Image 1 (cartoon, one colour):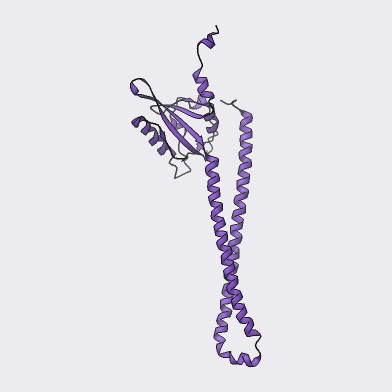
Image 2 (image 1 turned 60 degrees about the vertical axis):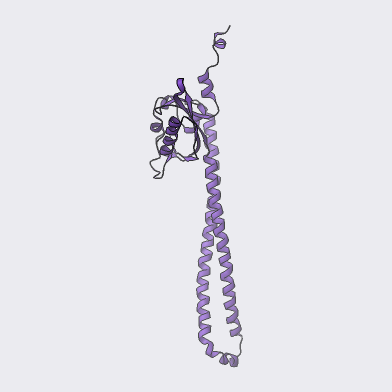
Length: 252
């Protein structure tokens, strides 16, 4: 009989080859095991992170003053150790360092932390499972920004219509005055201040109209820029994915 077949499956190989993003932590939060998919998603190598403390490998992004990833994950892992129950976290912004050490990449994750029990019900390990939801979150943020700009554009368009209506009303008054004959103009000469006020108001509205048109153009520019950025980001992601797929697991 084949000794390898008789010895049963190699569970470490099975774990490392699983399609999910898994990290196994000791109770002192040191990395014990990691799946290949997790290594790929976090741009890390097994031999470089195994045995090290979780937050040494994945610290907060120092360039993000609002980073809460470490604090939130630490709190969740402590709850697992204390309550001995799985703890599902809300979507977390947790940037990961580039392998070159030159900065961090923005990432969003959906984490689940699960206790692994040993003898007498003691927690021996924690399985840290994550799903990379970065594309979903960034797309949702872009959609919100796009909707906001669209709303502002609609408001600007409505404001332009209002300005044009008011200008047309003033022009109509001035036009009626301009077609009066001399005798009729003399009869309304006592309304000269009113006509002057209309002319001033017309100039003011003209300036406001120009400002509103400039604002509308700026909103359109932002919308077009956002669409271009989204298209370029998708192309960069496709190129990045293609490049990583070609590398496969050679660097692990």
